[in-house]
Length: 304
Image 1: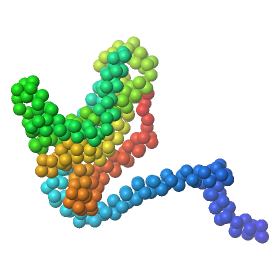
Image 2: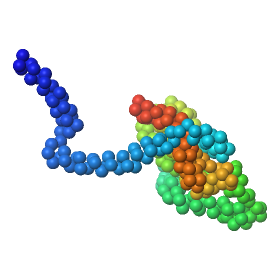
Image 3: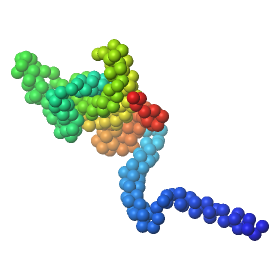
Image 4: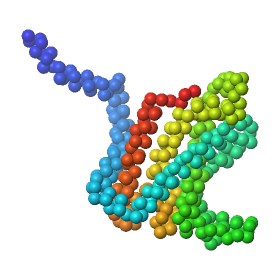
């Protein structure tokens, strides 16, 4: 009885010791001390710059009255249309071009590799100078593009940034120009991972050219293409660089997307809660995309 009681009373202590050993792993003495010393700064940075801003933002945008005010704003309604167009055209066109160009860059030859290096430059160049340069190129009076149109064809170009649809179109084209090289490299890596035996067997069976792409390449790249689409959609929903630096949301706040509208409400109008609410209105789309992406990354992989 005495022995059983000792074991019984010692149970919680034993469990605590086992749990402590589990968290320590195989580290002992100074190894554990150094591990904690390296881990604490990362935890501090994560809490300060990830966890705290997220929870503070959720708290700031937690009042239902904020969303009533946001949804009733005509600028927000226009912004919602702009965001849908920006994401739909930006994501699908750049990934379609990336898929096609990845096939082109699979061709042998030193000149193809040289073209690939030049093609990657728009993505490698920092975004800020790139989009500011595009803004001045599209200036209606003395921008580079209109000067070229006048010099080559003797025609006056439109005021690209003074009309909603030409300004929004310029933003979408700039986004595609900036990010297509990145996704091209990703899909090119996926193509290069396809074993040559599969392509050779397909050629023996008569699948060449377009038939090889339809029945061999694309089915093997389908999972990678879907993951790239999900990632690109998430990135594009939160992207504000193109709109902010090319059009500034103009003319007359007609080209805002949700990210730039949030910045406008928070800083230009000095209503940070309204800005957070505008950005958080994208969560009903963002959260399912993240869940689908996580499940896709967990349960599947590129089938080669």
